Amino acid sequence: AAAARVHEGATPSPGRSRPAVVKIHPVVVASIVDSYERRNEGASRVIGTLLGTIDKHSVEVTNCFSVPHNESEDEVAVDMEFAKNMYELHRKVSPSEVIIGWYATGYDITEHSVLIHEYYSREAQNPIHLTVDTALQSGKMSVRAYLSAPMGVPGKTVGVMFTPLSVKYVYYDTECIGIELLQKTRTSPSRTNGLTSDLTQVAGSAAQTQEMLSTVLAYIEDVLAGKVTADNSVGRYLMDLVDKVPMIPAEDFETMLNSNINDLLMVTYLTNLTQTQIALNEKLVIM
Amino acid sequence: MASRKESGVSSSNTLDSPVKQIQIEGLVVLKIIKHYQEEGQGSEVVQGVLLGLVVEDRLEITNCFPFPQHTEEDADFDEVQYQMEMMRSLRHVNIDHLHVGWYQSTFYGSFVSRALLDSQFSYQHAIEESVVLIYDPIKTAQGSLSLKAYRLTPKLMEICKEKDFSAEGLKKAAVGYENMFEEVPIVIKNSHLISVLLWELEEKSTVPSKHELLSLSSSSSHLEKSLQMLMDRVDDMSQDIVKFNTFSRNTSKQQQQKHQYIQRRQQENTQRQSRGEPPLPEEDISKMFKPPQPPPRMDTLLIAGQINTYCQTVKEFTSQNLGKLFMAEALQGHNS
Image 1 (tube, chains in turn purple, red):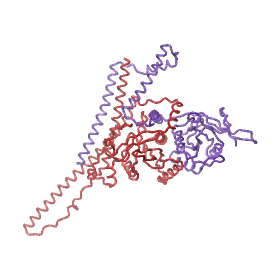
Image 2 (image 1 turned 60 degrees about the vertical axis):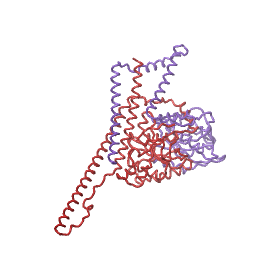
Image 3 (image 1 turned 120 degrees about the vertical axis):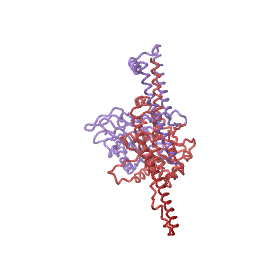
Image 4 (image 1 turned 180 degrees about the vertical axis):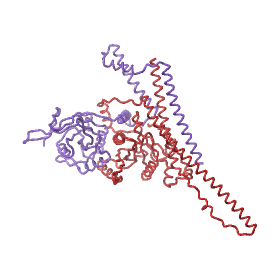
């Protein structure tokens, strides 16, 4: 079977709704990169199954696991038993995830990919194929998704065409925060980062806001000095920003601030009291 | 380096345990977050197993897998089998298959319980360096990842081994609620390829980073809930104290009764001797006065530990909020 890659958009085939967007959670790509790092000697790429949910217009990929396989010049062997087992195990934890496709590391789609894709077509309707360029052949780690469509002349040479889909990254709120923390490891030389404690976090956020404010200020000064043309929409955002700080008369704000501070201090006092109490209780009992 | 918080743990700088630091890969953090997000809605805890290896005095956690939740209809579900199969399969794809601990999500910080103690004890007994990772999703949603690693102190291990939970046993080992668990500092480490991925994500993602951390309104609901749980625990504690008080009162009353009985006996005996009659046989006093059951001290210890953790979290929270309030004041000051 011949494989080809086309750059136009997918033409919908009648009777089957084809997803147009693939939404990926970062945990999936991180897993793929990790499996690539742990691949067997001599293997040039890793493949695995993608799990997730499908709805009418998009596919959301939430999990994945790698499947051992052997690839040589003329043949490819995939451990399908393993794939089935793993899927069953995963189903026990999250029963709502289904097989929606498969992934492979590397930049190109090879002939072997077509065979593997055929196997996955038996497991899922319309499987998507994801490639993650871990060897950085294209200069960066590009993640692309494809759907297969039959092509060719019916009756004579038929083949499979992989049409690209757009890839979007989606995050849960908590994932966002986790990723933010991980981003910090990029800057440290040993690629490590500790978890910070309460006030340091607030200080960190304050520093971030300060940075953003200084960028905005620099932009405003440039506009005033005439270096950059003013953009009306940016101006409107700036107005919104300034308006957000509420204009409260000073005494009202003082009272509000003081009452809040008093509340918080009271809570701190009570918790300290409780801690002292249990410490005392302990000493009395042990005696 | 990691900055260590003073939670309800021994505040010595060097932990006298084989594990001084935990190194987690970013992948594990993401997986734990995802597991809770998808399967942990509601107040059920989600649990899973941590895999990794031990390098010198560091425990490196390189992967993890989740545990399905217990459902009533799945009575024949074999946890051990699931675990074995999972680890066997992971070994095929070259993932470290050494068990190094487990993780659990917590609801507003309540995790000091008998179940946790027992599980961690069996883990630590089998594998000396294992830890339990406590992930607090609600605190994380408020702006900063809350992931802590705990181990049982060697003293507590001793007690659990001998199953001696009475007051004397605890006094002997000098275990207070403060040295039940020790916290191990966590460091997150990512490989180079993951750094490339992170760079890519930052470029591609159009999601604005959320600044929940600076929101002032987050004080109300979270604080309320935490304080409520604190109050419940304190109620439990006071009940426990009442029980202990009744017990000690009963013991002292009994002592008195025993005393009186012995005295009466002696008096009678002397009287009888003076009259020339044989003395009454010595009865077995202990059979007559059965000592009341001393209440188990372990529960009190756990409750105290839990109260301590609650107090710590609340204090952290209030200090953060105070900081935020002062920042708001500064902002107002510039305006007016």
